[in-house]
Length: 101
Image (cartoon, rainbow, N blue to C red):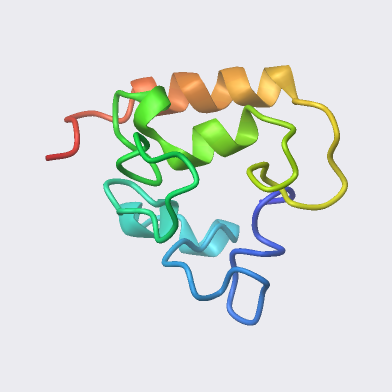
């Protein structure tokens, strides 16, 4: 919520994307980007925003795991990779259940 919802919310910088990360919006897996195709080819081999069971094919994971300005998430206020956050995201993706089609 704290690192994502300020952009991924109605009226936020990324409100055109299907994800909604405010706590009250996380019950729907689509709001979390699970098996949702990304809109931009930042990483062409990242097939979904969140690819269940495959962090390397997950756009969100890849964007959290870089400091390159045109690729990183969150966009602002970050020049280092939050290793613990990336590890938590990797564990979550690996435990999401059946893979995306």
